[in-house]
Amino acid sequence: MQTVRKILRKIFFRLIAALLLFEEWGWEPLAAVFARFARLPLWAWLERQISKLPPAGALLAFGVPMLTLLPVKLLALYLFGKGQTTLGLVLLLSAKIGGTAAMARLFQLTQPALMRLRWFAWWYPRWKSWKDGVLAEVRGSAAWRAGHQLKQRVKDWWKDLRH
Image (cartoon, rainbow, N blue to C red):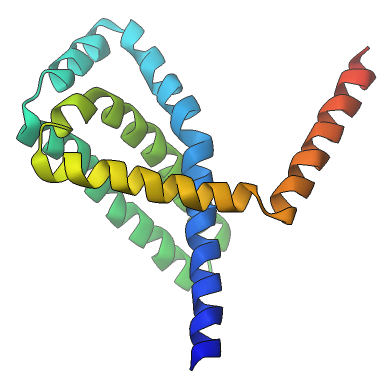
């Protein structure tokens, strides 16, 4: 039983780590992409309204879009089941990337109000600390270091090639 538990824990850790790495990689750049829309007057007005929301409104503004992505992801699973793997994968990746971009920007706009919710102010630093610990463990792994070295070599090769 202990062996099965250890194996399941390793599998779960790797899945969570992969998800967190994707979120971490995409969070800031994708939020910046969405922030560029603020150059549009209507979008800028909408962002100002969101940032002025009280805590309960901020929670809705942050949470509802997350829930609206669930049917899209379920549709992708349905497409997988029907054998339309490519379409399902494109839909799933689009929902993941678009959802991450929207959620990242919405979090930037709503975080001050969300932190006024006692439970959120208690939960968020703990979540962030746990997430940072998982990411530190992944970044300390031999696979991560090897991938980082490979990435650096490819960058150096590309730089040499261009000159």
